[in-house]
Image (tube, rainbow over all chains, first blue to last red; front, side, top):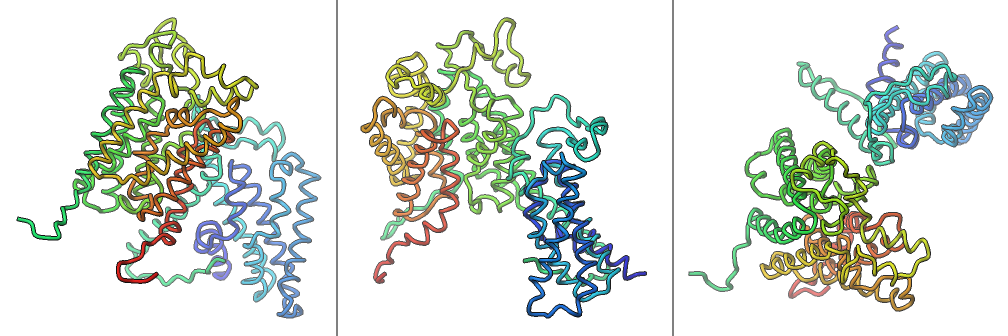
Length: 226
Length: 339
C-alpha cells in the first residue's frame, strides 16, 4: 500500500507538476484567470493523464523504443479528442471558455512526461493512479493560482461556476471584496507569472523550513523539467 | 595635497541621489504653481511607502537597513514615480505603484545595482495597465479648471475621493494634451484647430509646459554637476525631434511639430531623470546613444500609433531588456589594444 501513498504524495506535493517540475506551464499561465477556469482545465488534464497512463501501460512491452514518442502522442491525441468532443456535447459553455486549450492538452508536456517516465515502466493500476494524481496536483496549482488572480483582479471567487454546473450554481459566486475597482494586472498575463513565481517561492520556503526543523536532511530526488 | 593624475573622488551614492532630489525641486514648485498643492501629498505618500517597504525588504533579506535606506535611491524612485502620476491620484494608487516599484522591481531582483528594469517605470506601467481610466485623467491646470480646489480640498480628494459640494470630477479633470490630441485627430480634425484650444500652451500643454521647463532646468543642473553625461538626454531628445520632424514635414496637418513632442508628456522628465538611471541603463558612451535614440523613436511611435497616450514608460522598459546586449556590442577599445 505504501507504494500508492507515495504516488499520491509525489503527485500532489513532492513532485507537483505545477510548482516543482514546472511542466505544462502554457495552460498554467494562460487559463488561470479564475478559479473555475483553472480547476476545470486542470481536471480535464487529470482525466486525460489517467486515461493515457492507463492505456500506454498495457502496451508498453510491444512499443518499439525508437518510435515510442509518436505512438504515445497518437494515444494521447485520441484520448484528448474524446474529452474535447465529450465536453463540447455536455459542457458546451465551459468548452467555449476554455476553447483552444482543451485540444492543446495533447501538447502539454506533463502528459507525455508521465507516460514516458512512469507508465512506460509500471503496471496499469499504479500508472493510472500516477497520471490522475499528477493531474490533480496540477489542478490544485491551477485552482490556487486562478483563485488568487481572480480575487486580486476582480474581487470575486468562483465566477463562471455556472458554466460548469448549470445556471443554478450562480449563487456560489462570492464577492470577496465589495465595491472593488479591479486590479487588471492580475488578470493580464504578467499576473500569471507573478502569481506562479509566488507559489513556487512559497513551496520552496515551506520545504526549507521543514528541512531545517528536521534533524536529518532528506535526500529528495527531483525530476528535472524540460 | 593631491598628486597627479588628479583623480577626483567619486561622489557617494547618497550625494548623487541628494543632488537628483535637489534637481527635481524646481519641477515640484512648478507643479504646485500649475496644479495646486496636491502633488506634495502624493510625494509624501510615495516617500513614506518607499522608505517603509525598502526597510521591510532589507530586513527580510538580512541586509543592513540604515546604510541602504540612507543612500536615498528609494527616495528618488518614489519621487520620480510620484511626479509621473496624476497630481490628484488617490492614495491607494500611489501606495500600490510605489510598493511594486520598490518591492518587486528593485528588492526582489537584488536591490540597488541589480535591478534590470527602471523601478519607477515598472511602478508606472503596472498602474497604467491596471487602472487606465484613473491614470489618464489628469487634473486641469488651476486657471483652466471650472472649479477651484484649495490644498485642503485636494488633500481630502486624495485620501477620501470626496469633492466639495457642487463640484464634479469633470470640473477639475481634463484629458492630457497628448490624449486629447490623439482622440481629436481620430475624429479627423485638423491639427492646427486642435492646438489652438485652451488646453494647449505655446509649445505643449497649457501650464504643463512650465513643469517640463523646470525639468529641463533640473537636468541642466545635473549635467553641470557631471552626474549625467550629455549622451542620454541629447540622443533621446534628438531622436524624438528628428523623427517627429520627418513626420511633421510629410503631413503638418496630422503630425505635431517636434517642439510639441519635446515639451509635452514625460519627454523632459524621461530625458534627464528616467533614462539616466545608472543601474538599468547602458554604461558605454556608444551604448547610451543607441539606448536613448531607440527610446526616443519608440516613444514617438507609441504616441502616434499606439493605444496609450504616452509611451515613455513602455519604451524605457523595452530598452532595459536590451541593455546587456547593447553593452556587450559597444565595448570601447581598451587603450593599447586592437579590437
